[in-house]
Length: 547
Image (cartoon, rainbow, N blue to C red; front, side):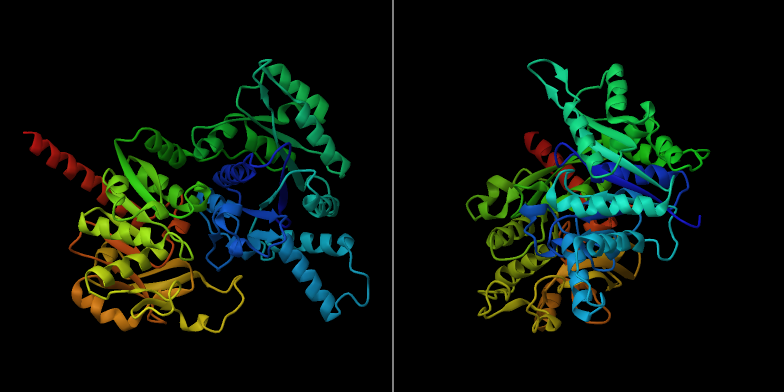
């Protein structure tokens, strides 16, 4: 295919309707039919990327293989499509304006007055097309963040209008995701908000081709005709999207309504091939019919907004389905953990995950959680900061390094077990300057981690400034908390494990970013297997006590 087809996904009525899930579901369906697909997110906020945003503002910051700090929707894209995204897959208003201003400063515009039209819109169009510069894709799906009518989204809407004109007929499609609210008092679904949303989009020069209608209740047949008539779309192009038990139901729900066929016909592409969905259906069957149930404590400081740890919870779902176990997450705010409360919070779980994060709030609670899991033989997985807290706990309570701490939270500590990476010491800007993206790690021959990965050299994604201080390497190794994963270029300790424990393993990287439906992460599978084994041993022990 010489020129890719473009699909634009917009949202109306309200935010948080699930444009990312609809885009990812469509991408998965089209890919399953043999098309080469990628998905892009256009975010209207002025931050250059989400890297400096508090997770409470925007959920987790997702990191790609090439080190881009991106919107969490890119995680959905990768999990559904089972393929990597990149820096080019996430564009923000901040990045657009930064690029245009840089060009203006260089004199690229030859003295012209720089304006939203054409300069900003041209840059947006350039970024959309940038994804296919190597001609890798048949279809490019672009999700436009925000809601139609938002002031900050207007340049994107105008750029899409222009781009559709540039591309020519049949080479692009507009999917508008909207809400059909239910009024309990009258017992009715109402279409008026959707009509207004479509009209608002038309005022910007864009006609919706397909409507995807989020709803809590089934839409009556006559309402489909009403929506099609008053929103000026074909009768068969109104798709119902009921609230689902899990986001992984959505592709099949949309497939049942021939959503992918509607899209392909709109783009004048062949519908001859049928989607291959057996693996997806098998995953869903395992997910919904578990043989076991596991309770995992997730100890972090952003637990009141669960999207802050979205990739971790999704990795639990993938790995849980792979071993036919349902994972129930117990959310624990690390600031609530102390020596008096840890028993109450952690005594009823089968495993503990100490989550990543930054700053000093809730640090001591994570250290206490690590100590409790270590001393009570509860399987524990520490991710990034979680690994660092495991190291500090061990230094204090096993090695006897009183006052051991991270230089991030106490520069005066006598035992800086965790210290600032050398290349970070002269950096002042916070955005995009951490150690980011995929880095290699060599695994020690006779180790638990090598058995888990079943290979000697791995590559995992990172997002951190501080590292294990190699001055304490021998102290840890000689006492039994062994560094078993080392970056071959820098000597950075990537993995610590305690072989004498049922499962006590910390990793400096973020394994959750690479877990997908098709390829659950081996580290999460191993952790859940250890938690399940711990649960069964605990039940057996209790049964013997009763006898």
